[in-house]
Image 1: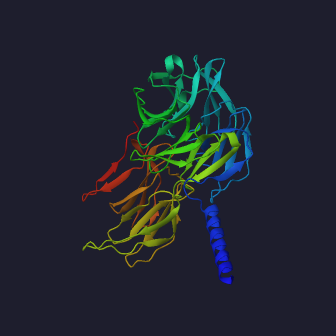
Image 2: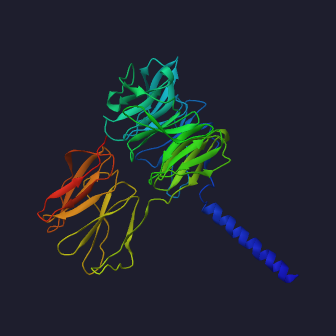
Image 3: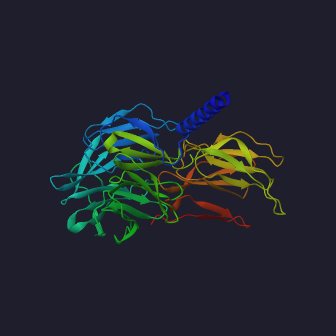
Length: 436
C-alpha cells in the first residue's frame, strides 16, 4: 500500500512538473493569453521602431497600443485613438504612420494615424474598397501602398506614400484586374509579391499584372496573414478557428485549433511569437512558432586540414540577426552585431584568442537588416541597410582604431541585407537585391 501511495505521489509530481513546464514554455500550437478584455480586436501591427503591438477594434474606432516586454508579456494598455474607422487590416510604414482602408458612403478612404497620434482621412476611389492593405517595403516615401477596389470583382491599386494627403484626394493608380476582393494583404519582401486572403483561398499576387497563384485552398474564411523570418506563411482561418502554416517548401499544416474567431496576425521576430487576435473572445493570444532572435553569437574555426574547433560564445554578445565578421592582415577578428536597439556593435578578438568588450559603432545610424563587413585598404568597411532602405557605409581605421562618419552609398536601394567582399587589388564589391 505504501509503495502504491508513493507511486501515485511520484506520478502526481511528474504531472505537475510537466504542466508547469507547458505553462512556462508552451509548445507550438498552445496559445498563451497576451491581453484580454478588449472589445472585438481585429487588425494587428507591430510598430517598426517601438516594442509595441497596435490593435484595432472591429466594433469602434479604437486603436490600442500594448508594449511587448522582452519576455513576451504585455505592458500597460494605452488607447491611441477612438477615431480610427477601418475595421480589419492595418499596416505601419517605417516612420510609424499607421494606415487602414474604410468604406464611407460606398467610397474608399485611406485613414492614417501619424507618429504623433493625429488621425486624418483621404479619399482614394469612388468605388467600395475591400479591407486589405499592404506596404511594399517599409522605408522610402516612394514605396507603394497596395489596396483593392470592388469594381468588377476586384481591382488592384497602388498609392505612393509620398502622395498621401490628410484631406481631399490622394492620387493612386490601378495596376490591373485581379482574382478577388482581399480582406487582408501582406507584402513579402523575401519574394517581392503580395499575398491576399479572399473567399476560401490565400493567393500570391503579382504586383505588376495582378495575376494570382493559389497557395492555400479549401479554407473556411481566411483573414489575417503573417510571415516569419524563415519565409513561412501563416493564415488565420476565422471560420474554422485555426491557424494554418505554409512552409517555405510549400507544405501546409495546422498549428493551432479551437480558437475563437482568429482574425489578425502579427509576427515578432525578437520573441519568436505569433500574435493572434481572437475577435470572438475579446483577447490577444500568442503562439510560440519560432525561436526568439536575440540569441548568443558563437565562433567556430576550421583549420587548413578541414577540422572544426568547438564553437565558442563571444562574451555577452546577442543579436536578432546574423553577425558580420572581417579579418585584418594581423589576424585580428572583428565581429559586428545588431542588438535589439537596432544599433550596431563591434568586438575584436586578437590572434591569441582574447576578446575585448562590445562597443557601439558611433554615428546613430539604425539598422533594419544584418550588417556586412570586409577588410580592405587598411580599413574595416561596414555596410548596413537603414530604415530608409538605402545602404549606409562606415570605415574603421585599423591603424588608428577610429571610426569615420556614416555616409549613404548612392544609387543603392534594397529590401534586404547587402553583402560585401574585396579582391586582392583592394576593389570592394557590394551586392544587393533590387527593390523591384
